[in-house]
Image (cartoon, rainbow, N blue to C red; front, side):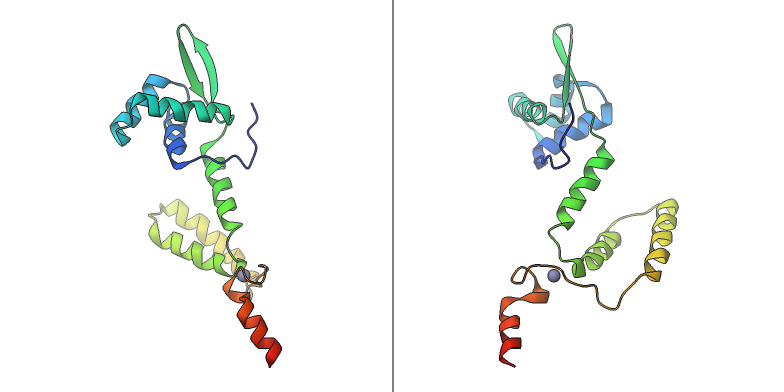
Length: 155
Ligand SMILES: [Zn+2]
C-alpha cells in the first residue's frame, strides 16, 4: 500500500514505527515487549497504535500461522526527511539558517558527516545573500508584522 507523502503520525505511533524499522518484520508481541520496557505501555495501548498505523497505510500485515507479521514500505530516513520538510514549511525562510545552525550545534557528528556538511556549506557560500528574502504572509512573521506595516504607511 502506497503511503501519501503527507501522512502524519503521533509521537506514540512513531515509537511503534521505530521497532518495525529496526526489525523489518515483527509480531505485535515483539512490538509490545519493546514498548512495555521503554514506555510501560499496556499491550492494549500498543495494539491500538499498531491498528492506527495499519489504517494509515504505514504498516503492512501478513498472516503467519495464527499470528500477524508487521512490516513497512516506508523508509525511516525518507520519513524523517519528509517530517523536517513539513516542519520547515512553517518557518520563515529568513530563520531557517538559524534553525539549522542550532540543530547542528546540538548533535554529535562523524568525520564523514562533517565532510558532507562542509561540502554543502562551501557550495552554499557561493550563492549566499546579505539578507534572505521573507516570503511569509504579513501578520505571520516577525519580518512583516502588521503593526510595522501600518507604521510604514504613517511615515
Ligand atoms: Zn518571514
